[in-house]
Image (cartoon, rainbow over all chains, first blue to last red; front, side, top):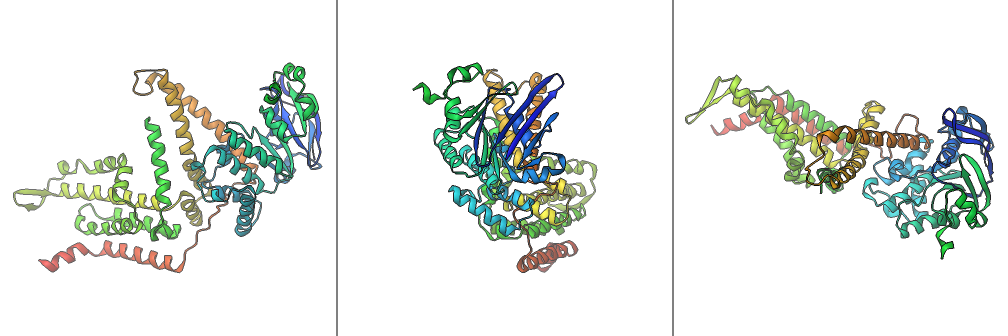
Length: 239
Length: 266
């Protein structure tokens, strides 16, 4: 479904952020992309989305190599939930935002609204439909941001810190929602408890390389491995 | 609460006004926009000495205020910063144009005084009409109406995003101001020596946000044309109302209604 083949990338010459990175994510998998600050997680996300292009190597999305020519097709298959929902929810109301992508991809207004209604109902957010984006709470905004992506019907969902700055109730709500999504998911986060709850597999990045790749249960319990990569065990393992 | 937080509350207040349910709020945004433009165009077209002719233009805002349920006080409170500037436009006319035109008892009314009041009223009427449009129509509907009138997409998108992010940016500036004031006890505001770095930081934050925002738009299929969720259409009743309003404005412009009414009693 998603594949990095020997990808290297640098923002400045002589200082590579991603070095010869290779991994593959199969359809239906939920993968946690973890690592300390500066490990290259956000860059990997941007490379998947075609917001950055690799200096060398290739990226495959749904069997297609990511090039400028296929970018719009590839982006249609990918939904990206940004860390700051204010950056994502740029339209005045929740429904405007939810209809933004479907309308851009050629749906009629009626179809786009029906799609938005269906997603809102599925997520239990129907009361948010006509609310102004700047008048809803942080937790509601995060859920609405996920809803805007689901309205696109993407095959893969990429999430950047989906539980950052949420209170426990809203955090749990987001986690439960993520768990119920059937799509292939890639989640970057420092919230390792959330990664444990939602992901079956974890890729640990360090200095732009894969430091470990395997089952979440295994990697997230490995204290030495995590500490060697400037991370700590999930809180549940301290109890 | 710092001044920026007050500004944020003012922005929220506009949303509350937008959400009132009234016949004016239910009117087509396109009709309201065109009526407002026609009203402003007619109002500013009066000659500077046609004070009595122009007075009848007050009927439109009066009618709209009573129908929309928006308090007149709220309008003047919101416009408290702009109104004095607008009113200052003709302030020097009484000194520059001293030709006497009439006498009220021993008080001589000069042409300059008439033109000053006319200019002030033009400003007040135009601002009030604009306020009524914005207070009764959500910004996305105004933007959709502008696109319907073929205003360039880039300008309309800019307007929409500026409105959406004015609040977010003000919030960031407010947090920065609080952080500054907490470390600068006794100061009433941000000291002039810190303005450069303060604005620089704000600019950098805005640029970062703009980058993320544009990425988010591109990733959802944006290709230069904004797809508005709401479609603005003119119903038959909206069209009739619009024609009646614009017709009345033209009539007010061509015929001195106040003069005619006055002549009935003199």
